[in-house]
Image (cartoon, rainbow, N blue to C red; front, side, top):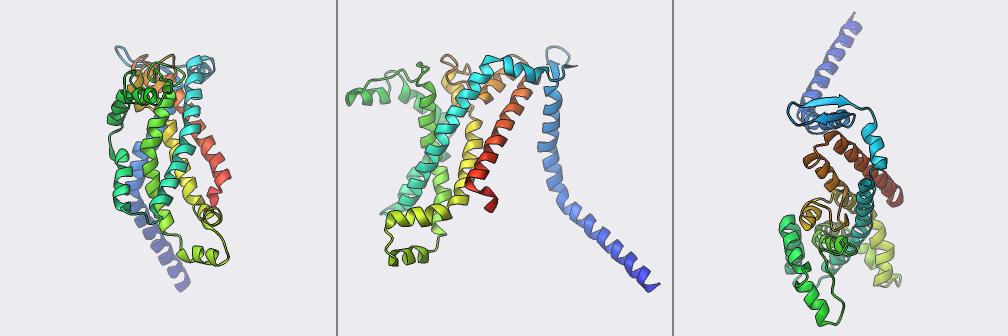
Length: 302
């Protein structure tokens, strides 16, 4: 009898604890459900329908037609190519630059606090403002062409030449985003025990050998985080491309990105279903690239 009563009390206690746990989780569940799960389900619904926005809103089921249209749409492949090229150049460049800046600031140079502030200024500046400033720099009669002419190098039509338009956005974003990741690297560098470097010095390792065999391996989890965040951010390139091309993705689709294409599908062509299909294509590419990075950097050890 007492054993049965004890078991009932344990069951009741467990139910109360479970209920309390779910109550503590409820705010997070509501936020994730409202802003993550429901939008994803709604996007799935839209991708399977043709949406009529003019007049009364109507939904016509078209199955996988929006996804098959992706294969036939040349602009999708141009946008994907531009975005992949942008990611492949910007992410490694900003990562290496951020690490170099962090190591430099961590080396005990004079006035390092002022240098930190100076380096970090582009990160806290509005992306739209930075883009307008660089448009002025890239202008045919702008500062960059004046400098190139002064040192005897050929000038470019940075805003109008399809061969260099995307490169101009790359340069701007490498310069403006590297300081953010520099701060992350700097925090990680300051957590590395000095005793490791002292022991390596006693064994005869020079600064370069210490950097390769101590700093780089210890920073591997941080590098995985930096590269992952960089890939996700660069795949979502929109505002700079929009401002540079006035929303067209020009010249000659040279600055057309996947997110800009989604914007055009929704707000110019009123094709919400097709835009949702493009968004799922972008999400799939980001997931695949992130998984590849995880294998390369050993992200499972974080």
